[in-house]
Image 1 (tube, rainbow, N blue to C red):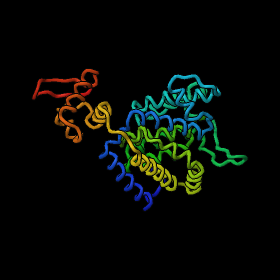
Image 2: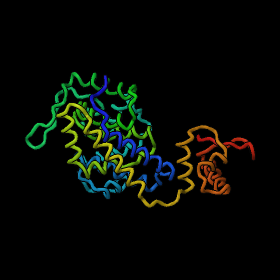
Image 3: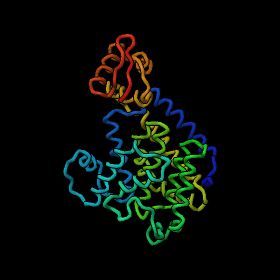
Image 4: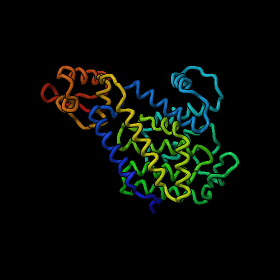
Length: 318
């Protein structure tokens, strides 16, 4: 069964725009941001996603916690940040189409915050804004089957991952499978899905733009609820992704360091063996001497393993 939504001209336009921007990002070697930008974007992601849910900590305080510095703030808020840092550090290990991995992620995110961390809810829940009930989630007895349908959709549907990630985000909000932490999990799992599509999404602070457009975010959810499909929400989230990629393209970034090149090349080649010439074909702006230094340094740091000698030399990642 496929969740209800339509592919509109607006969705197709955003898919085309996003694809063009990803092409430009790949050409400029920006799909793995520089180390400092990766850290900065991860902090923005964590702080923004938690602030949407009422966390009071600032970017400076989240940075201090990440740097193991003392922060004076409510214990609950600090624990939320620590859990989010722990989870985002493990994001590469999560299986985007596995319910077991999904529940494990929730257990990490809500550790010490909810007695049912990592467990599907067993009672009814609703979303209240002020004095008004804005969404009544499906009965608890339906949650497991609805999650099975949703994850089966992720595994088998042929629509682009960009669309499926938005559909998942909406459907998770609709199902509300947990007693707490649903919004955080929806935003996190969209990132888990998107990073399989392109590594640039691992550190793209989509949540920062959602936070800035928070009223639009909830409005799109509400419209989709009333329409009985996620079309409007897909259009909104694709506009957010397009905006985030546009911001990345316009950042003034320093040249790639040797470490940046080595990390980036791993995302392209995996554990396949390669030569210095293969390495230089991707980084055409560097000399053969620079390429040799990059590879030699990576071997010494045990990032790469070298085999053969002189003309027969090949490398592969551990």
